[in-house]
Image (tube, rainbow, N blue to C red; front, side):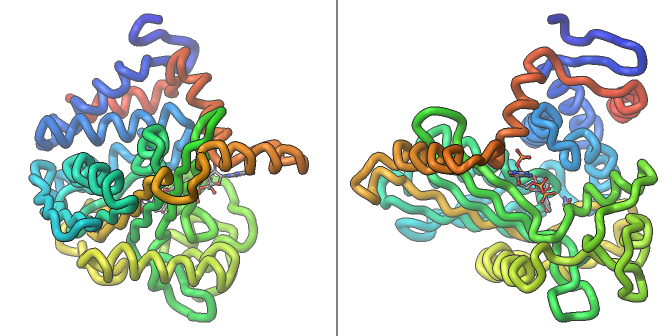
Length: 341
Ligand SMILES: NC(=O)C1=CN([C@@H]2O[C@H](COP(=O)(O)OP(=O)(O)OC[C@H]3O[C@@H](n4cnc5c(N)ncnc54)[C@H](OP(=O)(O)O)[C@@H]3O)[C@@H](O)[C@H]2O)C=CC1
Ligand SMILES: O=C(O)C1=NCCCC1
């Protein structure tokens, strides 16, 4: 297909054309070429996979953050080889994905030689979906787990005010016949991005997602965004996982807790300045059995008991569909083109 085709009210772009457009936006707003490429690919791949809460919807937020001076779009991450199974990165107040890209070769080498390696990223801004950070490891036969904390907007179970971020957890594992097993979920009942999207569309949320400024349950996304808060998923269980994310992504990395940064002097800033932890395991060092065959067997059994949808299946369906091109509505495309000028 050509790079861009038009239908009534929408346009279809190839993945390359979308990456190039997003890259232009990042460059136009002062990032280095390396940062622009990494973020553009990340964001375009989220859109391709139908991960809309962290696709092109996020571009105005990236731009207003860069304009506010809150984040450094030209940061050069500092990678430290601290121990046989441990890599540390100071993202230098830059985005998390370039920090991961800089540390990745060392992390993989350590995981392959020691069987397991940990990457601790601090001083970083993660404004994206987490699965793109873990899925590539599984394509290389490795198991990966990552956590990142975000900004205070979730009330811990049993508390009456927000403290945690929406704090996602992503996991990826190879399997023998098929796409890797990948899940990526916010520990809040709903991602903050999806609340913003619902507010924009004027839709109500399902019950149990959040509370208003008085702490009363509400389905109104605007009431949650304007003084209200989100709830953890699964009550005390999601709350415990969210607490764990704060400990691993912030306390262990040297990053900020979700409640610790203050962007009030940077109007327009949207990205949380926190930390991220990745654990990468080489399964060939572990069980003495072929891990990918074992994970395939688990999937076979899950399908055998009637399961129709694995986490990641929807994304891969969207990815396959996007091979024909990624469709954006006219308004969104016009907004992106304006941001690139
Ligand atoms: N950077 C940050 O600080 C933050 C980022 N986020 C991001 O927001 C995104 C959305 O998070 P969230 O709203 O919790 O994600 P969802 O609740 O939409 O999905 C969570 C996971 O469950 C899978 N899934 C969903 N429905 C089903 C089903 N019926 N059967 C089987 N599997 C299912 C999804 O797979 P599939 O993808 O195939 O649908 C996905 O792996 C994530 O990418 C997350 O990383 C969230 C919070 C903070
Ligand atoms: O959707 C969310 O929740 C978030 N996404 C990007 C960073 C802040 C929280």
